[in-house]
Length: 406
Image 1 (tube, rainbow, N blue to C red):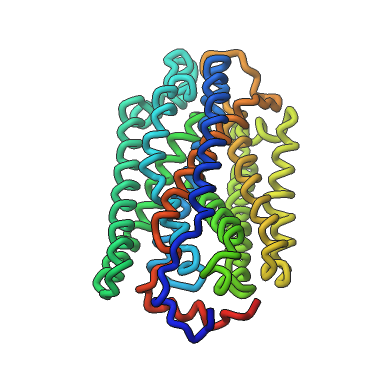
Image 2: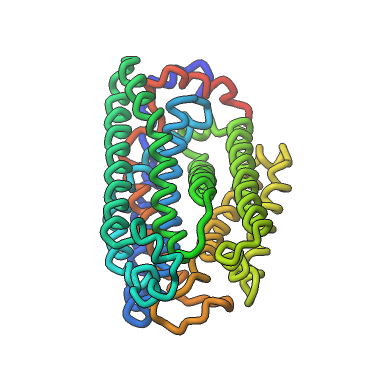
């Protein structure tokens, strides 16, 4: 395709490979789900921990995609126009994730010790939080979060569908109107959700930066996933013409930025708590840097931050898909490791399972694999139903300015 060709004259239909990927991932997801269901009968609490890890991982893909999509509606940019359909497909899985939350709700008494009256009776600091940490209010907050997430999903997708055939500025403006408060909604609801579903696993501990930590974590997860999928489709039009070194460089810089912010929030939280030296706060970290857990903590320092940071400083690497994709894949793997480190060391309600020493159960792998497979199957199904680019986007011709750079 020449740089002089008008992009709007093309439909940009998804390649057949997208549909086949949807089927393959769904098959993998359902096979892993069979193993996961067996694990639910063998060890229900281990299964639920694995489910929570996997659920928060795929929730991060969807909510991170929503946040990046709304940010793009407000700011624009070539990176956003190229990846917009991927972000919309990721966000489109939020109704599915609403349904997939049901096992967590049903298993909440096996996940959260603050629902155990015996535990609450012996921990006065937890009893003092009863107005917030109670079954009914916890459920209500979850319902509110999902209602808001689904509302924004419907409105943003509705506007995007209209934009496929209507170039009226009124539609673009409406998407911006929803995106501006949507960023605030994302920050508020994610803080509530991660406080309720992750932080409350250890109800005596708290961190005021925990929600912000997850905001950047989910943006990082979504950006890395979008890059990997884009590069896997680089041979198909229009990506073969527009996904050149300078566009890859944009994605590499964003992943580098999110990696640095993730490290900043992680280190700030640790430094403030460590310096405060308060028993209820510092014990959370002591449980994660002793008993073998220090190996996982060190791997996060090296493989989630130090190595990607050093590699992404290279301009050459950020402009080469063959070098950049492995870094993005490493980031995705370490997002799983980070969630494992956050979830598993917390106490198990009513059991003698020792979480003070590093432990790993096969359901911690099988259940997240099932959820990732199902999520990606649904993702590619949504992705294959829309043109790969929004042809009515007024700034779209900018993508062809360096059409032959690679």
